[in-house]
Image (cartoon, rainbow, N blue to C red):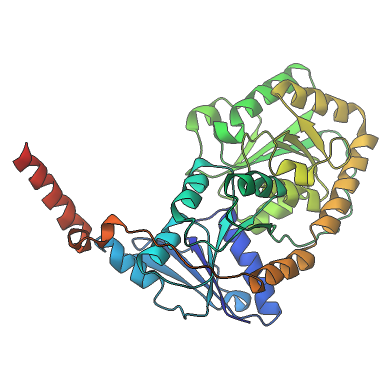
Length: 377
């Protein structure tokens, strides 16, 4: 089997989880792979090198490097038979610029304009698109009928916890960037409304400092426990002690934290999105689907009153997550998809960077561009 080469921007996020979990399975099953995480400058790398991730390295570009030199550095370790798994537009730019003929997969992580525009630009070099949910596959296969699409879920290890019996007070948790896209504004309203009803709960918010809306954070009522930049292993341990995950996000590719919660016997109360959430949550069976913050409040009120229902949902969520999202099944599916990829005749983009002027160091190029503009003016 050819070597599988994963690329991803060297930042913490769902893309890293996707790549890390797959590479760990590849290591355990003797499949050859390489991970290349790239970034700008000499920042701290997010790659956690272990025995299971020994074939991984970070590549941090000089701020003075040209685009062409970045592209060449990115692919310097590649062989012509490697299968390339790309997660962002930069890797596809490099493939197109250097006219590489390797079989190329693009991982579609979300329903965002950035991903849509990336596929439009690089449709000619992408051989296959792997989607992290059924909804993404259904939508984008219609938008790009010339490309083959498949579902390839993120691998999450099965967990068989002793389901925590729901006692008072209920423990509720929000995990994600504290911003409007993730529904943080609705969460503030929910907490205020639940407090006004006198329902006794404990609120926990896990977020990252870099992506938080400080104005919204400042609106959280007193008594909410806020945690920043919690290591993933600790976060998952803490998640297993919760009763309910409140997930009011307005856009998702899958909604990874929902799956992580279900695997730990936590009931998700999630916004009824058309993409991602339907793969995991069946209303009142494996969680609860809501359309407004008022519905979140009424659901919390219901579960506060009916603890037997809550405990049943917890167990059913765990059973479904472990059965349908079994990591070995989906890892084998990923392997099968990769092996079956057919290479096409590539259509490369002629990019501006191929002009001699763009082979200058970025700082010199921008200075020349500024001076030329002044002369013309």
